[in-house]
Amino acid sequence: MPTMWLTDMQKIGVAFCSGGGFFLIGGVILFFDRAMLAMGNILFLLGITLLLGPQRTFLFFARRQKWQGTAAFVAGIILILMRWPLLGFVVEIYGIFVLFGEFFKTIAGFAYNIPVVGPYLAKGLQRAGEKAGEGNRNRDLPV
Image (tube, rainbow, N blue to C red; front, side):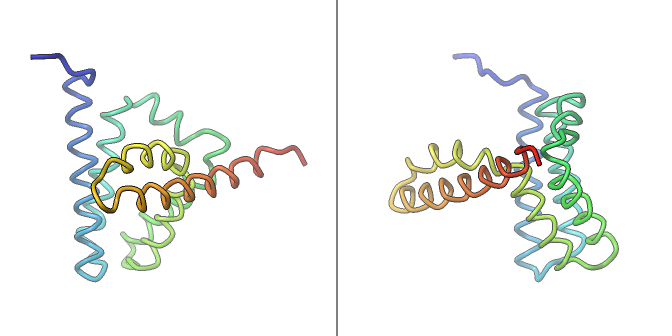
């Protein structure tokens, strides 16, 4: 049996991120259930930390180019915990888009292989990645 390139801790991190995504989707389906959204956020953050490691996770969220996304993501979590789940989720999605927008192009490459809807999904993800990249380039320009 071939060895995987992920360590056991990283495999657990992938499982936590997936569980966090399912809880977030479930929270939205259940009309922005605050408890499910909060559990999804906790699992997602734990998963990212286990996947990347604590130091690399901190460096990812603390990068100067990512401050706006990090602030929006944290503000969204706080709004959810303060019983404003709809507004908090919208702010949080904006933060996720800014933080992880560069990865949309990579995900688009994998999505292209999905039967029937893959090419359409890949095209949308490619456009989203380009939009996120434009925002990062504009912020990096000196004033």
